[in-house]
Image 1 (cartoon, rainbow, N blue to C red):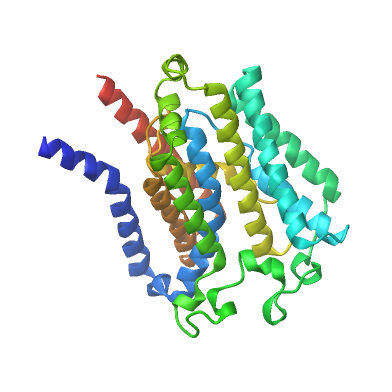
Image 2: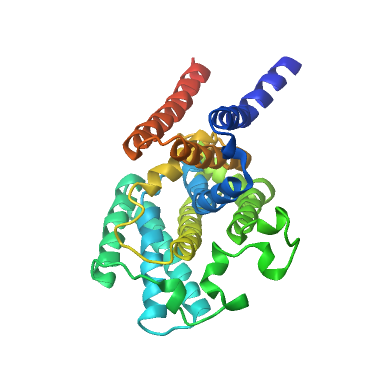
Length: 338
């Protein structure tokens, strides 16, 4: 019994060992990898991956998929920038409307998957195509630049208020000034809060128990009284919401909205989630593993850049990581079934 318990605990936490080994390897080849500026840069980079991965975790837990999140992020970028730059909207109002729009797109995905019965991969691929096209139409196929500079609101010390989400740090409020803690980006704090909320939903709420139940056996869940259809609406709405929030952080970080950006982002988020131990078959996974998966992918991308690995080689490596993660999950399922 103790041996089985130890094996289960090791399997659940092995992903963190992989993360430590990865950090050690990159640090060995480039000691600057663990420098404070690079750690801060990684925290900014993984913030929007991490936030988007929370919604994707919920979707994959019920054996679904959401291929539309990249298009949602891009559309949120374009809509929010357009409302502020072209229509002079208040920044916070533009952000709220953009995130509400992203949530409604998630509801639309839930409607197609749950009510109409379209397979999730087809429904969300259709959404991906539609809303990427709408982003091109709204922006005229051109970037909307200098959003930070020309947005209506100005923040602390003259810094653009939109920069709050990705460029501001605790030093903006003189919290822990001139220390490493004071350099923590706000976007990293937002990501931590979102992970805490996601973990609470999965571990402490009946919604989380329903997510696991639906992923384990949808028909049995329906027979036990769970309203599977409504749960799917909720799950895809949450995926849209977190993708929308990630979109605001991307806009704050880049300072421009481009309809052609973030191609393949959805597959990188899926890699983070699956690498973190969430089964593509549904019903299995923990938010702590997803956090490790996000950190591994973020560190991998940063480490390869510091080692001057070409962009095309990085694509190969990330594809291999996804294939290995899914392959390991399928292999584990076969062993349990045999």
